[in-house]
Length: 281
Image (cartoon, rainbow, N blue to C red; front, top):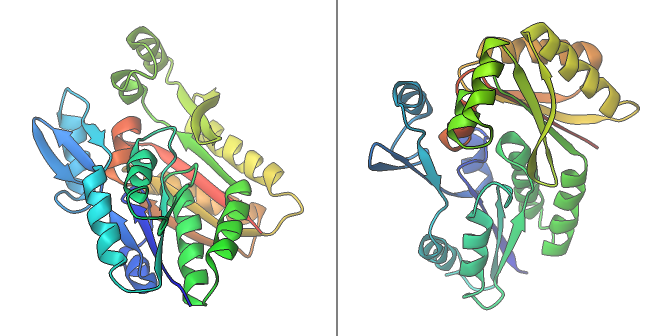
């Protein structure tokens, strides 16, 4: 029977203890700040990065893992006979990570399958965790791929940005629009549709954001069983807890997690941002 090894990248927000328990290999992206390069989650902590993010004028730059690093890791995992690698990564619309992984896979004679999760953060972890759980139960590659495709189709992700400064620095909006938005205290809300950052609406207060997320969650999960709700944040734990508390009044009987997100995602959103993610059975 073929042994399947699961690989993901450092934008997958999940407790490290769970990753270790499930035997998932994480390939770190890199972050460049002030001419120095750090491996995400290896050379710099989330707290250290958050400090650098707000104290630096220039926006840090993130880079996908090089093809050679993927090849090295894949070859190491494939050293055992009858082994296949399933490599699940952040959306290709926001990073070249999937492309790097695929180029590495192309060198290994069909023994690596690369999947574009179309998501980031905890939403990526939904697919990674389920794939590892199924592999540990002896599931086939095809059945795992079918299961995570089903999860992908039933996942929602909404990002709320507290300040427009970092969207402007990253070139997603103009500086003039960012200045006006900051004066009006606008908080943009976007979703990931087909893996792409897609503006949905804007709100001017946390209460309005809370109402929108709660109403959207209620509408999208109507008559469905919610499997998991995750909230990833950048220095916004208190508001994340408020959101989760509200959602638990809308639906019961789902597992939940609140985590501080990776520096790769923080770079583009800035402090105070949260991302709400959930999927249904």
